[in-house]
Amino acid sequence: MNHWVDLEHRLWRELNENKIQDKKILVGFSGGVDSMSLLWSLKRVRKHNIEACFVHHGTGPNKQYRDQALVFCREFCRHHDILFHERNHEGAELQSEAELREFRYHSFASVQTEAGAEVLALGHHREDLLETRLLRLIRGTGPQGLVAMRIFQAGIFRPFLQVSKADLSSYLEHFKLSEIADPSNLDLEPFRNWLRKEWLLALEKRQPGAVNALARSLEILAEAQSAARDYSEIIDGRSILRGPFLAESRAEQKRVLASFLLKNKVKDFSQAQLEEILKRLDNSQKVFTFEVAGLVWEINAQQIRVQESV
Image 1 (cartoon, rainbow, N blue to C red):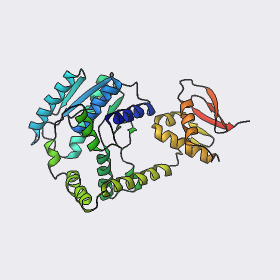
Image 2 (cartoon, rainbow, N blue to C red):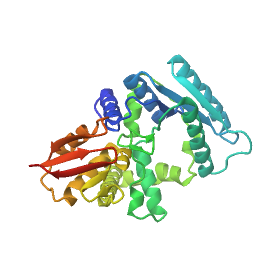
Image 3 (cartoon, rainbow, N blue to C red):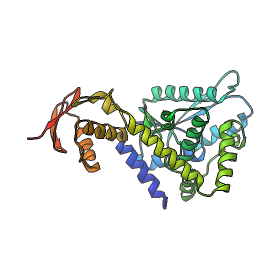
Image 4 (spheres, rainbow, N blue to C red):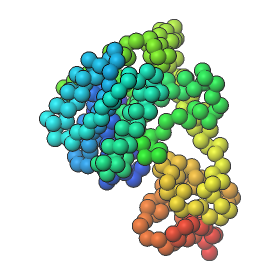
């Protein structure tokens, strides 16, 4: 990434492609590099309808950091006029990563309901995605496990999955913004931290460029797995079920359309035509028609149907 504007342009594009540019967004905000970059870039790109939520995991060896991070995040939002929410765990210490994650996502869902936020935004970046895929492989996943996180799925927006943590750090440096680091990230437990701090660093030292190559290979395999999906729950002969289709991300909608055209023996279509079809389908009317790729597309409330143009 050559300049900070590249990151903001990527964010703007993902907001628009996933049709969430006008929806209220709640940002999971911990004060770290990733969530700080996400909140700041959304604030600059969107300027409104952005709120933040800090989840305090309660007592435990990391409580002092959690207290400091809560104050840091609260003050940052106050200074930059961002509505701030907090949730605090009360009671016995949360022991496992699974318990921490469950409380965190339950808290986000609660705040979303309270704030009327349709989208939860999280700052997962390229290294997070690589680590998740490696962990799944180590635990014995099949090829479907490589798909892992997506940029927008089930109401969760992760626009930085193709952005490195180093680029996020450079972005903050450009604006002279600081973050607060979680000291537990230096611990070699849980296993993810060991993978990040020991194994991947050793691999890169032994074979420079290997980590990026590994990430690219897993991405290619994940794309192949996505492409292998038959979409039988969406495609029905010469029609596409409109509701399930609209529930997919924009990238997935393109794959549905490509699969649909191939199933209907249309092979000479272009990416530009797929984009044009998506553009035409982005229409609030319940019933309408248009012609693209040699087909007449007939749209009603339930279906997207096609017939050959005359």
